Image 1 (cartoon, helix red, strand yellow):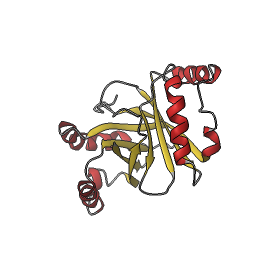
Image 2 (cartoon, rainbow, N blue to C red):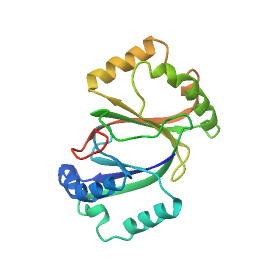
Image 3 (cartoon, helix red, strand yellow):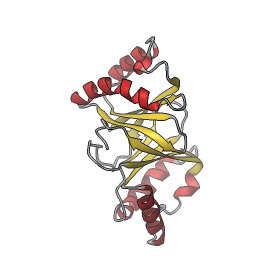
Length: 204
């Protein structure tokens, strides 16, 4: 399964206006079954809006991105934008398909850069470790990028609150189920950001 991850950076204080502009367009996409999430950053790299779509065919993805980059008003939020990235990610083969629902409302998005030979090893280490980690809390996504700077790996963890996040992360370490044994050895950079859902996000 592939997913399109778009991150729109906006000027400070403008994300409520940008979300209002995005809402009608994204709800139309939700009706077509493609749109999965619209979240805005609360901690970490702030002033960002993350859009998650289920991946379609390559030609369709190219057409959508071409329409965006040639638009005079990308996403309808051009006046607020300071930057945008659009990337395609491939899900780890053992992960179930992402479906809409109430999972958060706190989403921790962790983005790692892997060693040049680290992807295959990371997938196998996670394949073995994730079942144990799921006894503590759910994992929404684990996927690697096939566009833009490589080798990037993104995983997304939903929590009911920031306090729950801290408690469950501490428990996972204490129980010895996380991180995957040898997993940190595959990393050369990492970043964690906290996102909250827009009120119209299918994943809330």
